[in-house]
Image (cartoon, rainbow, N blue to C red):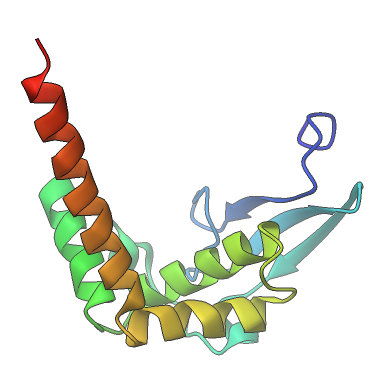
Length: 140
C-alpha cells in the first residue's frame, strides 16, 4: 500500500507483545520499503545493544503519566522506555532519509536527548501551542 501511495522509504513493524512499534520485549518483524522494494527482516533489541524488557516495563499509563514519562526521558532518564524511543526514532530518521542505519539513528536520537535539544524542541512546541490556543480563544 505504501509503495502504491508513492512512499519513498517506510517501515511497517510488528513488535513482539503485539506492539505496533519496534519493541524491546523481543523480536520485531519489519518490512522496510526503500527504492520501491520491500525487504522483510527481524530485529532484536540485543542487536543494537539493548536489554530485553517486559511489556510491563514499557507500558504506558494515563495521559498525565505518559507526559511525565516523556519529560523524564527528555531530561535524561535511562531505561527501557528510553530504549524504545531510541529504536523508533532511529527508524523515523531512516525513513526520512536522515540516517542510513539503525546505529546512526540511535546515536543521533541519543545525542538529541542527551544534549537537551529534544527537550528544547518540545518546549518550543508547547510555547507555540499555547500561542495558537491564545489566538484561537481571541477569535470571535
